[in-house]
Image (cartoon, rainbow, N blue to C red; front, side, top):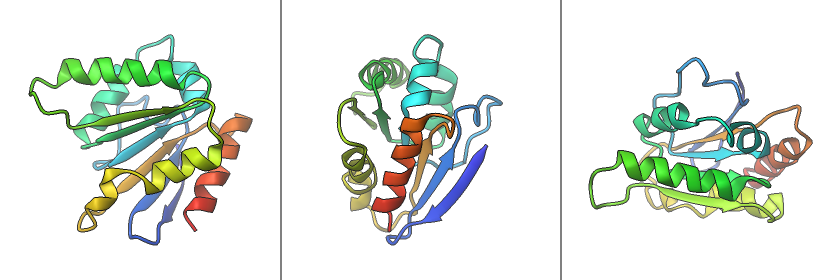
Length: 149
């Protein structure tokens, strides 16, 4: 379920969703960047995430950010899957992982240091998939809200 939306100062939108939101195959029609939190990376590391990544790619998502202790593993799986889908020589996506970094740094990087901000003419949607029952994801959500002020 999409739990909240926040309009950012630069006109972009930050949307928070829980881990199960996209299991029915639905996804916002446009997503510029996604942050996959601790609970998502932990839950999906042993099962396929291909359906969600395909949905996000169809929504034109170009930036995938993974946080938490399984972030590097999830980052590698996303890279492998997207490279299989992309038949061109041009890479049209970026993935990063933030395993041991402070959540304030991860939040700041996700919202402020992407190449998407070099495209101010576009309305970007930043999607954070977090689990409100996971303490680490709650901390990360708090940092995202702090950075977005």
